[in-house]
Structure formats: structure tokens, C-alpha cells
Image (tube, rainbow, N blue to C red; front, side, top):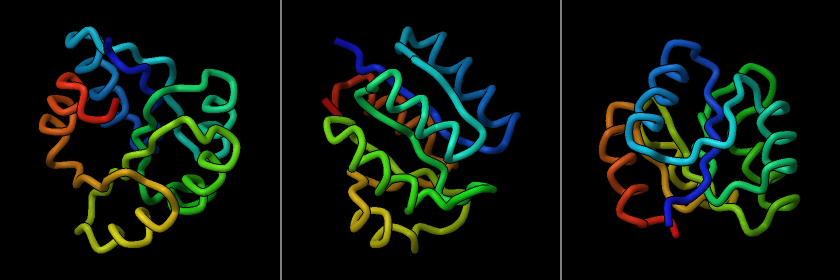
Length: 119
């Protein structure tokens, strides 16, 4: 069973590319958001299996947003997603994220989702 995914990413082009890649891969994308607050609302509404969370967002960082989602939707797993180096790893893991991936490794992350790594 393919997990239901929510993407929270503020870069419009990257978010669109991620949406397209998931559509082509037959991954169930339940929503996408450009801000943490919008993403939190969608997470509460859709109860996704997995959230791919940008670490740096314009309204709240992904670390804090992960904490909120873990509190409001504890059955959801969060994967941090960063365009910078993975120094955010410890903070995202402490907030409740399962893992942190650099954005350059999106295809690898997508393959892991398809393989059921985050079930």
C-alpha cells in the first residue's frame, strides 16, 4: 500500500516538481503547502501517513512545525527536507522526524517511499 503523502515546501518550482514526480510514480499525494501553518492545517485535515517537511519555511521553521504535527497527528511520520547541509538532522529528529534528506536526494527519498520504508 502506498502511503498518503503531504508535502510542505515553500519553493513553488520544487514543490511542483515533487507533485509531478509523485503523480508519475502513482504516490498518493493528499496535499501540498507553501507554509508551515497551511501544512499543519492540511496534516490535521488529511491525516497523511508521511509529511515531507522543508526545514526552512517563511512563517515557522520545519522543526517547530514538526513538533506541532507530531502533537496534533501523532500517527503521521515526518521526513525533514533541506537544501542546506544536514546539520538540521539532530534538531529535526529531536522534534520527531523519522529522517532528514537533502533536497538533492529527492529521487532517493521517492524510491524509499515507494519501497515502503516509511510504512
